[in-house]
Structures are given as C-alpha cells and as structure tokens.
Length: 292
Image: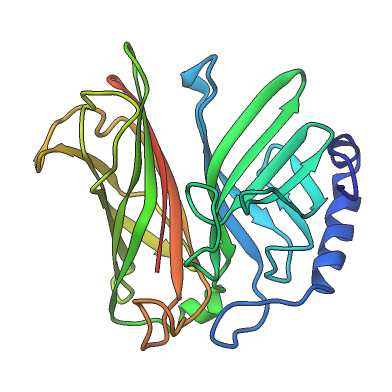
C-alpha cells in the first residue's frame, strides 16, 4: 500500500517532496556502467477523451536515487505521487493509492523482463476535481547535464517493439499503431536528434492514415531533448495529413555507456526515450518510444 495519499500530496506538496527524496536517497540503485545514482525524469502525453483541444505534453520530475522500485516520487506538473511498489500478476511494477494509480511498465505489453535497464514506459491514472486523467509516457534514470557534456560523435539507438502511436482523427475511429520499431540517430557534436518509428504491428482499426512517423531535428539541451518537426508517411511517401500544426516533443537520455546496449563503446548515454504530441487540422497524433 502507498505511504501517503494523493489528497495529502495536494495539501502539502513541499512536505511530500522532502519526504520522498529522503526515502529515495536511502534506496540503492543507479545508472548502468557504474554511474552514480541518477534522478528520475521523463515525459508523457495526455489526451483527454472529452476535449482534445486540452491535450498536453508534460515533463516528469522524480526523486533522486535512480531506483525504479521501493518508494518513488513523481511530479508531472499537475499532480504528485509518493507511493510504494506492488507488482501485478503480469509482471507490471504498479503503484496505487485510493483509486489513483500509476504503473512503470517493463515492456509495452506490460510483461517482464525488460530489455532496458535505465528507462521504462510509464502510465499515470488519477482523478482530480472529479475528472479522470490518463497519461502515457516514459521515465528513466536521467543522464546528468555534466555527463552529457562529455558525449561526442554520433550514435544510433534502436528499439525493438517499443514504439506506439495513437492517432485520433477529427472524424472516425482512433487508430493504435503498436508495437513498432524505433530508430534514433544522435549527433552529439551538433546537438541534433532524428527519430523514425515504423514497422508497426496490427492496428486497432483497418485503413490507418499512415504507417511511419518521423521526428526530425530535435535539439539536445543537457540531458533532455525536444522540438523538431513531425512528418508522417504512408508506404514511404509523406502524406501531409497530421504533420505540422501544434507539435510538441520531449525526451531524455538515460544511464551511461551501457555495455549491453547497441550504443555501447563510448562515453555516451546508454538509452533514451521520449513522448510527442501533435494537434493538427486532421486530428491528433501522440506517441512514445524507447531505444538503446
């Protein structure tokens, strides 16, 4: 059971934050490759079913200690959580308090084990003011700005069956494109990142408007990255639908020089992940990805 309630978090956020950070400092854990404990950070997208115009992309701040288990503190800028871990029968690391809950998911289907050591999918569900909120995103052992200053050269990060995209047209059904592949090209010297999401599995509906998502030209700022432009394609050809508009993206680097990852071999982050949201005249596109 949780150590505190969401109501208490609303009434005394400063106290909650102080207690949570103290609890996490006592936990073991850290980034891979012998790195010291790393603060948890992440990003998520929220798509309210009642009004898509209120869709939001939020950065997530967590407690120090770099430990996904035991006690964890999360602040998404809207609500705060300080809770203890339980685990469901399918292997999902799950936190719950008075009907509000969030889950750190090992893999997109909720099964374990995960191929990632420093980053996870995250799902937030809670009720505030009588309204239910749901967010999906990523959270990881944030690579510090100081470490990122040592990264150089280029790297290719790949994610297998780790990306998912939700498409909500202005009219018609939602389309869930998942799972898929994530290919992330990083140029640390130029501070630029390009993401390609493709090879999606069966969708929830027939006739999806596109089958590939690209995010071009995100910029690196310390351990975070974001910005860029969205391009969607069908059979290799840009469709024009859903691209542009009000586009937001946010991502983090996680861990450091993971010997098990495809990016190993240099002084660079072990893993990365992000979330994005585009509100266009054709509808809403939102997604998340992780890669190593």
